[in-house]
Length: 323
Image (cartoon, rainbow, N blue to C red):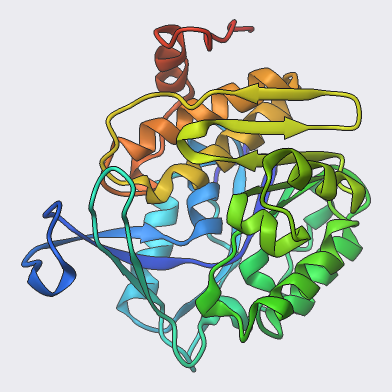
């Protein structure tokens, strides 16, 4: 990072090396060729926010192995500060495979046993400039094990300003049972400003899968803005005095796995720019749609110009551009 770099977004959570099939509609056991990409939800959100021109740091962990070297190099290539990536010699960098069956079937296979370096993050790994970031982005999956859980709580305790976003990001394989996830996610909801999740993630977090009731339940738990993603049905967002709904941006879906992370990075952009809720969610929805039309996740993240170009030709969702 050069001397003009300013800390704007800090994401904390998992990284991985994504090995995605280069063959669509083929079962994993029959795939012959794969592409290697940087992945992991918090890492993808970091890349997505950086694509919109922001100073972004990711706090994550990698193994002392060639894949760990790849993660660090790729973060730097994609414009993300990697100075707080922790190298752990005890555990390997995780690998993730998927299958691609458009438009809506993309099974994921995580190789994260017995644990991963990102779940070994401790409060001592937090950046000393934590208070300087405008947005702190946390994921529920980072609460699934210690000492990562304590690192998340310590990050919240150290915040004295800015916005904190919790991505509800529920992955059943990361938790011993659903009730444990509900407990630990619930402990954070009253301490964050924005919560974002799909219907299943909202159900686990607050026991509601109806979009309206889920958003209301999140607000009741203390968040200021609740965002409920509903896939091709669109996105509902509520604050204490506003309700907006943005229809899904229609594209030909190739791989939907990175769409939510693109949404997250674009959400950070809108929050930093001070946009209103409708403009922010419309922009984020379009960013997610662009990535859903592409194969990979991190390197598929769009620029602001790409998002605005799509919005300009999407009926009812054009976004006025401001300097």
